Amino acid sequence: MALAADDIQKVKSVWEKFYVNAEDNGAIVLSRMFKEHPHTVSYFTNFKELQSIAGTASAAKLEGLSEVRAHGKKVLSALNDMVQQVDNMDALKAIIEPLGKKHAVELKVDVKEFEILCGILLDLMAEKCGEDTKTDFKKVTDVVCEQIKSTY
Ligand code: HEM
Image (cartoon, rainbow, N blue to C red; front, side, top):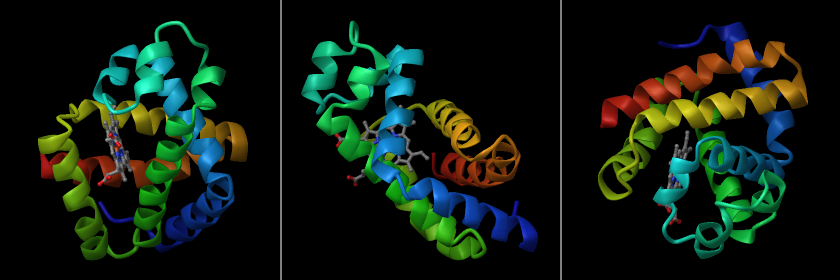
């Protein structure tokens, strides 16, 4: 479902603040996902360091791995592209379609994992930018998850 005009302004402005620290915040989101939902590590077969230490290392240690940091930045950058088009559903769908298909077909990521990652992202946004942010930005992650589901 599309967002109302005042929601769009709110989410863009909060996202701008959060995205300033894209690499740090992306790495925190991923490392929490790996610790709180250990099965998600198994998708990242190319991340050799992660594979070797995920079972025993702390979230802080995982957060510092260069492969986790680089990927965290990539994920937030893709989300940034989506946030910029949140007021243009056709453009948003055009961004999400290939990414969703890649996760579904090539990476074989279960679609329910997106809800997990988005939940962690919203919690971190609340910690960094205030509790209200969560309610506001959930409107974005709901649209993103809905569109990703439609590509599966
Ligand atoms: C909104 C949420 C997500 C976004 C925006 C996102 C974004 C991306 C992007 C931009 C890439 C790189 C694609 C490319 O190189 O062509 C990628 C790769 C990948 N994603 Fe996601 N992703 C999300 C959620 C997830 C989740 C929930 C999982 C699994 C738990 C996952 C697993 C992977 C894996 C395994 C790769 C390949 C990593 C590699 O080998 O380099 N993603 N994702």
